[in-house]
Length: 272
Image (cartoon, rainbow, N blue to C red; front, side, top):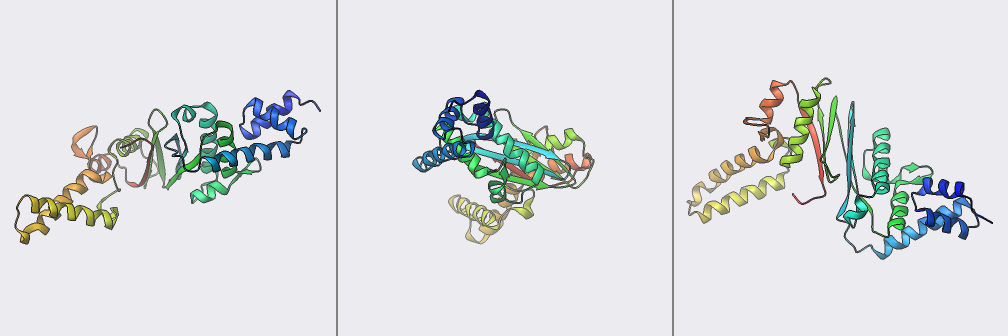
């Protein structure tokens, strides 16, 4: 039977596959739409298995925010050429839209969610079959708060989201904090939230440097604590110098503008 252009377009809309791939799948399945979808999925699975050892270092990072919730979704692929493809970006956007609507609590919940009858995991696999590259859900991050904001750096490789305690934070103020997190890559919101293993590592580095400088063993701990304090000021969001005015800290800027960040997330596919 002859395959119609309407059927090809319908299959393309359902799977994101190319026109010729859709036509071939429909011809092979004798026009059976479900069988055609399965053929495209199997092609993606075969490619994914074949390229499982390849590095998916490129990709697309998108973020969005609304009252109470913000999310970042990153879908990874092998090459920047595919990462910039309109259909690949559209797939990432589709996943982000689902995340914003459903407010998933984990990446697994997103992967298992069904869109048009197929799981997100299947959609990614099918896209892999279209491009011939390994693809995966690289990151799914979210924050909750009275007010949330997103920042996406041009190029779709870096994004941040921030939650605030107040409902009516000025948009530009919130965006400034999101941009701070993007630019300065803080390890935590404040010193109390820095993981213990990072604190221990920084203390040990401080002691070792002091030894190399010939400092007495009896004062190494005190010197290391001083250097840890400096680390907190450089590496926690609230204690960092504000990028728009180094004379004040982020805490100072937030207090002056009645904004209290409660959490943030940052995703960067580029090397920091």
